[in-house]
Length: 120
Picture 1 (cartoon, helix red, strand yellow):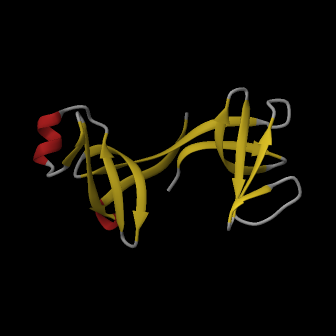
Picture 2 (tube, one colour):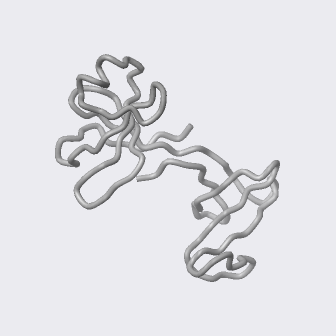
């Protein structure tokens, strides 16, 4: 499940972080031009003319008839954040208020439908 920036560079997608006009891309194994920042984590900084596309990718779903953003996956569970904007419904769904107006919970993956990625 993806929720974050992605850069397309040399025909491949990489996890990315915008850095001013540039983009930092990451991989888990060594490669030419990538610097190890910690064991199993390599970074390369690209200028805008080096990469093809920088987009935000978000995974969304429906659970118990309500819209959610998928934040993480563990075993057969998804960490989801309510995207419906109605606090009474979020409470009715049994979600915890993670922050003011932000409701999250764990959903069994077999109860989730309409799971898909959106490129924003």
